[in-house]
Image 1 (cartoon, helix red, strand yellow):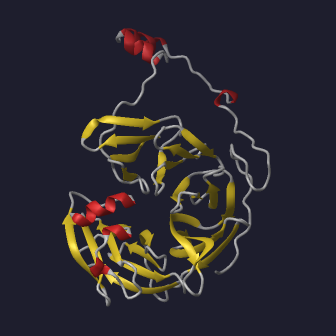
Image 2 (tube, helix red, strand yellow):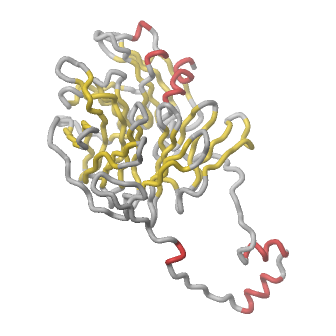
Image 3 (cartoon, one colour):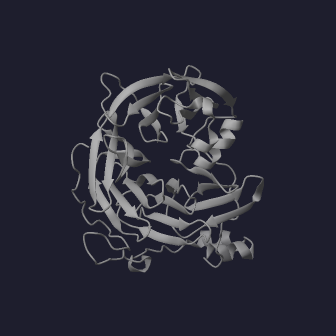
Length: 380
């Protein structure tokens, strides 16, 4: 692919795991090492507090620890903040990960102790065995959770200011973490060891999605891994294709050309064969990029999505019918959601994409859904 990105970022706050660059792991200072100023309340304040119930007085003195029992609702403003797996919803609730039964709002489980501030992005591995959550603030760590046990597998501490995007590879082996506009660092982590495989400094990455393996000229899969990003550099966004060599830690990138077209992208996903990259836009259409040439191939016009495309996902092959096969034998289906609550299933008839199934939801489709939910979306 295009230019080589092998420049390593600075050490930052240093991870609690080993990196390729060295064998020393330096922990960040504990909270006990920081000085805290305590201001004594005035006499009037003390008198007001004395009239309150004893339990509340004890709570205000720090004697009672308050724990979150239930979380109601979801605003949809967190990047990929809602997933569905094994009959439960996985979503962010403040600084906790909430695993809840959609049929019983009182049946909830919280993954606690990972973040000091709110979660900004959430990711679920394709096998469903790992959850990754990224935070913000003074300690914007990336926490990798064990889904079945609920414990922390890794605490990744390389980012300095905040996390804007996360993404597991299709096989769950690697995790990509992207810092926000102040951080601008991209790391690829090995989920078997917790070590850094590759890293670089880039523009602010807003979205990251994996696309299987890089293919050679004869369309045979190679040992390199493919992923795509949408980044913001200056006034315009750009779509970039990446090739990762896990053996050497080498990252190669190629920016897709869009000609004279200017779009603001909201969501991305690869086709099942990795030949195409679909990107939803605020204009209400879907841009289709050809991966082999890294060029904008066409637009899929969606007149009903007047508020723009806010979610996009490619269903896995088992959920597709034989009538949706393209000329290359691969399944050509795309599910898109819009800001006006429209959920549409698009099929390729050999010439163009057409919306053969639609559904209207109460409110906007605000986030991408997990691959195991595709079947439910199509059958509806």
